[in-house]
Length: 420
Image (cartoon, rainbow, N blue to C red; front, side, top):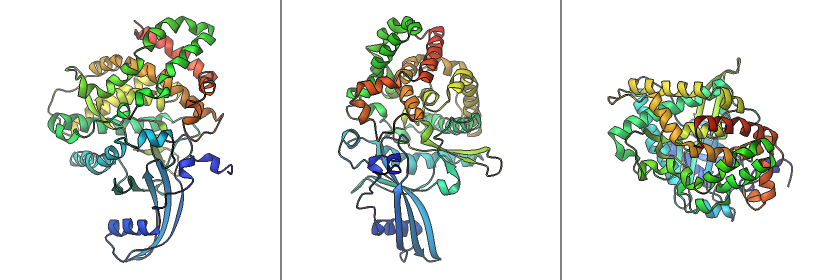
């Protein structure tokens, strides 16, 4: 295997046999309404790099073809399910993630955009899906955003301008869903499958990162004082992590705000477009809606805090970003003519505090993996390599930056009363 191939996941090194000229000719003929369309050549390559995503495989396909206007070329993104036998295929094969994402792209997000358009807001919430199916293959096809100038942030932290763009788009999405959930709740009936509904998810060793975290506390003298508090939390942490994802369905609170959540606001699940001259961020496109479901409103902000923001942004700008997000949220509610009682920032913050176990889980389980991916210490195809190697996974918790940030975050958690 070449060094170049080592940049990609094994799943994406070989395209499935059905991804061929005949299939793409059918797709494009139907999409363009041109029965005479003929595909001449296709070039298939991996669409993402290792560490970009987990719950699907993606290919970039450059198609050369002829249509009514003559010669044409199009770059497409083809998203399908894992084909390689193993843990990932076993866990995801019986899940609802493709049904959820197809529904988001074809039903919900177009409705949201229509509501915004009616209010004079031309925000695009997603790239159009030009083809989708569940049988015989689970597949979705999109126009490629890269030729349109969008990039994934991989080798650096996002700028504050980029974060604001993402939070602004999220706030508008949340506002429309908040209004629609009050007025047309039937729209969201099928969106009830979060991360916590994946088959056997609570049996997954990955979910028990707090065990490695507590071992790390033993290795760092000034952090040992937090060990008794974390040990008390350990036993029920996965169950408490699950709670905000399913709260709307299983334990709805009268004083809580609920929205359709993205539920996977990882930095690589968004793409940014910048001005070609000034390099100023102009737009953000959220992608990967496989886990979207109705949940507690703070979920996405808490998740993005640990899976998108830089350490400095988490430490020094989080309150500012929350206020920014909430102001866009309430302004959008006014623009789209929401008639109910206006949500309050104070009440949102109280709900945020109630999700403290979500925040603790992300610190102890997801954040160390993000540090490890950023460190570049080892390239890996997927999580199976460290699922089976406790010592390798323990190294995630020894990365200097992670230990230092943990020190700051545990102090903040204690001051907020998370351990009381």
